[in-house]
Length: 186
Image 1 (tube, one colour):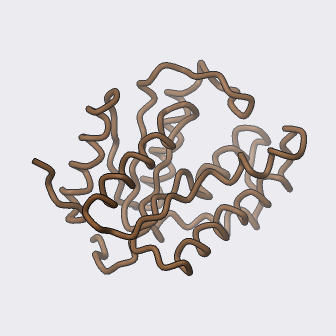
Image 2: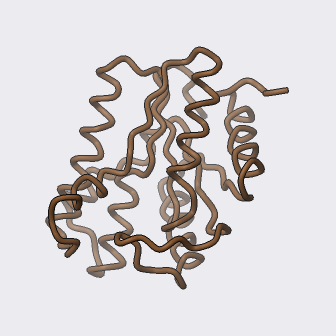
């Protein structure tokens, strides 16, 4: 059951290079055109590694998870009615499990996928785009399976979003409409 009281926290998760940032920006623009107060909560890992070498450790991943949650809280405190979260602590959890074989208990305690009004799971059907923080170009389908399993295990309402360009945006918007969180666009 989706709680339709605002503010809404919409999670956008999925494997690397699957268009999460692009989708968050496009959804924000559409809601803003409808007069909604929207904040896009960027992927905190990019800020974290902007001024240090990209050499992840379990402690770094925990710090990134905390930073991601702090950015969400700051957006809420600033008065946003809708948060579009370009990744969540779930990504940190999966990252830790893939890189180190497990997630630390403190990280697991921060992972609360049920706190989001709806989760959009971005399919790995877009072309791979190289990036210094990406490292699994051949494992995106496997990673997508890890996300599905984690969301299923948490009994989280999520919608798979696929397609290219406007078709991907339309699929995401339709998922939000189906959940009662957006108005159809004609």
